Image (cartoon, rainbow over all chains, first blue to last red; front, side, top):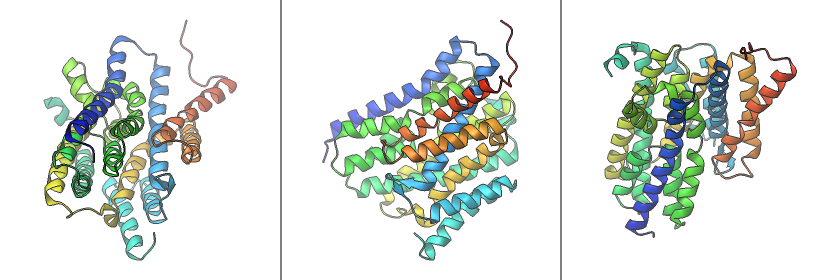
Length: 107
Length: 234
């Protein structure tokens, strides 16, 4: 197994790279005034990324289909959120649906 | 900093607290899984404080624990975290004006804090939602990781609790108001389809970035339809 020194170096490099990704946007925006049109596009881009994150994390793990329980839970949560049910109910219903389906033997 | 908590209403605070509680449980599972894989006790804590990105941490530990090269673990983690670059451009102004706010606020940039900020109207509410979610999840996640690392195998199956379905549902609920706009919805659907179709062929992290093609498609469609957004004077 990898030694402690290598693990520390790897963690620090991953942390530094991650921070660079996070810090680049805020620091560059300090210098440039963006038009409302560009601002709006950036917000759409963030929503599109989050949507893709929802889709992939709901359906795929390790490049394979995760089974039915997780996407069913997310779908139940999505429908409830669309019907403007309170957020807490949405989250608990999503988790509960997946948990109950698994208890019943659904993968 | 006080104004951040003043503008945070009770309902929003409760929603954020729920996500933080769920985050603590997933953090505990991360701590337990890492230590029970034979990795040192301090590793999950160091990762959680310095990297603070759940998916990348699980990926990193998975690769290292199975005897993989630490360089491969770093590259895989960075690919997963590259999405923070566009996130930062989108919500960079939400963090606050001072240099200290930008430094600390950047470290608190995660899917949930970005999504909570985007779901609010007005700069003040966006800012308070972002900081409350970021600080709350940082604290809860790290407490959970420490507890899990020491408790060992107590909480190692969050799937049985359905938490793997809860987090996508959290993000979905938070982006739904934005998806009421037809152009945004189309971009999101195209982007998500591209991400899912490219998943079998690309390393984790890249498919989500590929979704940005959906924004380009939206732009092209808009230009063809004769720009529906008001043009700025030259």
